[in-house]
Image (cartoon, rainbow over all chains, first blue to last red; front, top):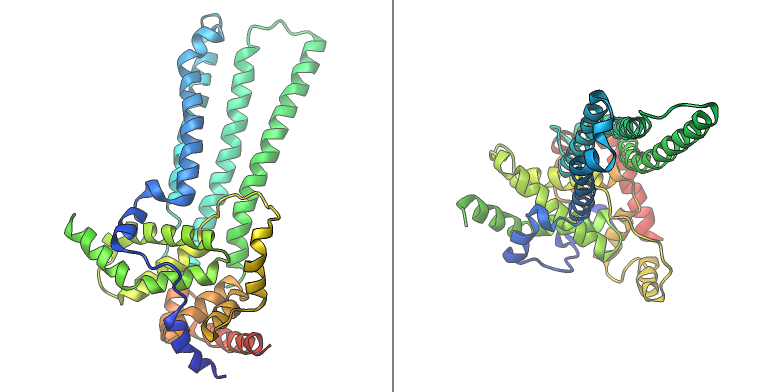
Length: 181
Length: 158
C-alpha cells in the first residue's frame, strides 16, 4: 500500500461526533473549557480563602498587637498569592505565543519555568511572613527556637516538594514534546 | 449574534473535520478527544480576530490546533482498572477495522512532531508550508518525512 493512497483515507478522517454550530458556539466560551473550568474552580476556592484571611487576620490573629511592618508584610504576601493565582490562570489560558509551533512551545516553556519559580517563591514568602507574623511577639527560648525552626523547615519543604512535583510534570510535558522536533 | 461570531462558526463547522483529525491523532480515548476538541475551538475563537486572511484558513487552523494539542495539559485522572475499558483496548490492539482507522492508529504511534508533520503532509501541505508552520528547515522536514513514511508503512503492514 503506498502512502500517497492513504491521503484520501486521511482526508476522510474518522469523525465520531459531528458538531452543530450550536455545539461550537458553546465550546468557544472559556466557561465550558474542560481544563480551565477545573483550574477556575480551584483558583476561586483558594482566592476566597486568601480574601477571607485578608479580611479577618487583624481580629483573629491580634493584628493590633503586632508591628505595622508585620501587618503590612502579611497583607502584601496575601495579595501576592492572589496575583499569583490570577496570573497562573492567564498562563494556562494562553498557550500560543509564536509565529510557528516550535517557537510557540519554546516561549510557553520559558513562561512556565519562570512562573513555576514565582509560584514556589511566593508560597515560601507567604508562609515565612505568616509564621513570622504569628510569632513576632514571642519571647524566644532555645526550645521554642528549635521547635519553630523544625516546623518552619518542614512546612517549607513540604510546600516546595508538592509544588515542584506539579510544575515539573507540566514542564516535562512541553520539554518532551519539544525534544521531538 | 455578531457577524464575526457567525463567520467563525460557519468556518469551524465547515472545517471541523480538521479538528477531529488532530484530536484522533493526539488523544487516545473519547473523553480526551472531546476535551481537546473543545480546547482547540476555544483557542481558535480567541485567535480569530488576528486572522487577516494572509494564509489559507486551514493553515491557520492547523497551526492553532496542533499547537493546542501539544501545549495543553490533560485533566488529572485517577488510574483505575475497569472491565468496561477492555473492548476499547482490544480495538486499539486490533488497530481498527478499516484502512482509515488503521492509518490513524499508525499515526498515533509516532512522536508529537512526527504527528504534526505527517498530518500536514497527508492534507496536501507542501514541504515549504510544513516547514513554516512547524518552525524547522525544509531539509529537516524532508528527512523526517522519509523516516515517518517508512515507520507508517511498517506499522500498517504488520
